[in-house]
Amino acid sequence: MTRITRVAGFLTLNRLLTAIVFISIFTMAVRAPVDTDTWWHLQSGRWIVAERSIPTTDPFSHTLYGQPWIDHSWLAQIVLFLTYDRLGYVGLALLVAALAALVFIFVWLQCQSTDRWLRAFVLIIAAATSSVIWAARPQMFSLALAAVFALVLARVREGDRKTVWWLPALMVVWVNLHGGFAVGFILIVATLFGEIGNKLIKNASVSWRDIGGLGLVLVLCLMVVPINPNGLKMVTYPFHTVNIGVLQDFIAEWQSPDFHQLHLHPFIWMVLATITALGLSGRRADFTDLTLVALFTYMSLLASRNMALLALVAAPVIAHYGTDALFAWRQRLDHPVRARPPSQDTARIVLNWVLVGLMVMAAGTKIAQELHPSANESAKAGFLPVEAIRFLQAEQPRGRIFNSYNWGGYLIWELPEYPVFVDGRTDLYDDEFLTEYLSIVFAQEGWEAKLDSYKVNLVLIEPQSMLGRVLTERALNGQGWSQIYLDEMAAIFVRE
Image 1 (cartoon, one colour):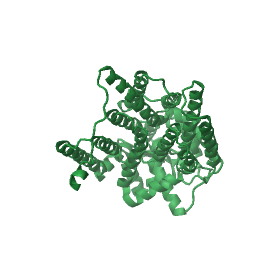
Image 2 (cartoon, helix red, strand yellow):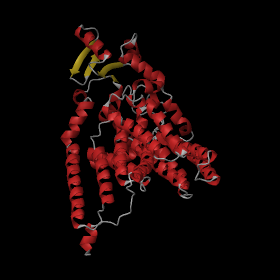
Image 3 (cartoon, helix red, strand yellow):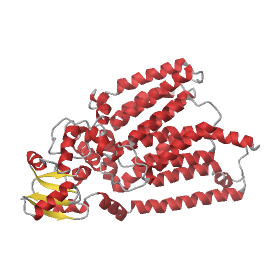
Image 4 (cartoon, one colour):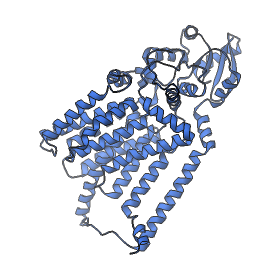
C-alpha cells in the first residue's frame, strides 16, 4: 500500500462515527452567549484583571455594596473575560463548544469497549440532555471536572490504583473555578457507597484496600478545599447556596424540570434507556452504577440543572449494559459477533472521507451562522433590554436604579456606572433580600416605601410585570412617576 492509501485508510468506521459524534456535539454547543449570568461573570473577570485582586466584598450593587461576597468562580471568570477580551463573543461561543466536546471526550473514554453504534447514539442523547446548562458561565468548567472525576473513579473500579491520587490536585483547581466542586465529593461518596455495597452482596471487583484508598482520597480532597481566596468559608458555601429558598421557588434551573418543554425530553430518554439497558443486559447490576444513576436522577428531578450531571453517569451505564443486551440478542438470533479485520475496500474508504467532509461542511455552515454578529445581536435583543440600555447610556438619567433580577448581570456589564439593585448572585443577596425584591416586583403592599428606603428613583422593568403595570398607571395619572422609555422588552420610569 502506498503512504497515501495508508493515510486515507486511517478513517475507519469507528473513527468516522467518533468524528461525527464530536463534530455534532461541538456544533450543537456553538450558540450566542446571551445567558443572563454571563455578563456579571465577565465584569467580575474584568474587575479582577484590572484591580489585580479578587473581590471579597460586593463591588457591583448599591443595595449591598461593600458587604462580604464569596466570588467562588474567580478563576473561571478570568478565563471568560480574557477570552472575550481577545476574541469577543466568537471566542466565548467557541470556548463553550470546546468545553462541551471535552466533557464528552471523558465520557467516551468510559465507553470504548462498548458497541460503536450504541455508543454514538448514547453520546448524542447525553449531550442533548446536558445542553440545558451550556452557556458562557463557570458551570461549564465544573461540568468538565465532574466528567474527569467520573472517569477517574471508573478507572478505580477497573483496578487503576494510581490515577485516583490526582483527584485532590484537581479539587484545588475546581474549588477556585466554581462552587459546583461539591459534585466531586458526591461522586466519590456515591462510588464508595456503591463499592461497599458490592462487597456486601459479593459482586465486587474492588478490594477493601482500594476502597480504603478512595476513602483517604476523599479526606485529602476535603483538606484541600480551603486552598482558595475565601479559605474555610468554601467548605460550607455549597450548602448555603442550595438552601436559598428563592432559588427553588422562582429560578427555572433550580426548579424541578417541566417535561412539557420539549428540550427537556432527552432526560426522559436517558432514564428510560438506562432502565431498559439494565433490565435486558442479562447480568447483575453493579451497585455503584445503580447508586450513581439513582442519586443523580433524584437530584435532576429536584433541579433541572442537575440533568447534565445525570448524562455523565448514565451514558456509560447505558452503553455497557446495552452492549451486553445487544450481544445476548444477537446470540439468540444465532448471529454471534465476530471480529472482522479492518476493511481496506477503496470505495468504503472514499465514502468515509466523503461523509466526514459533508459533516464538516454542514457544521461549518451552522457555526458560521451562529457566530455572525447579526445573529448574536438578534439573540441578545430577544433576551435582554438592549435598546433600553442604549437609552440609559445616551440620556444618563440620575438616580439609583431598581432593575429586574434577570437583567442585573447585563446592567453590571453594560452600565457599570449604574450600580444594580439586584442580579444573579443569589448567594450574596440571600432569601431575606430576594423576598423583599419579589414583594416590590409584585407591587405588594409597601412596595413604594421599600423603594424609598433604598433611595430608588429610576426603575428598569418588564412592562408586563405587576410593577410595570402599576407604574404605567401611576405615570398616566401623574401620581409621582413618569415613563421615559418603552418597548416590547422593557420600560423605564423615573420618579417626578
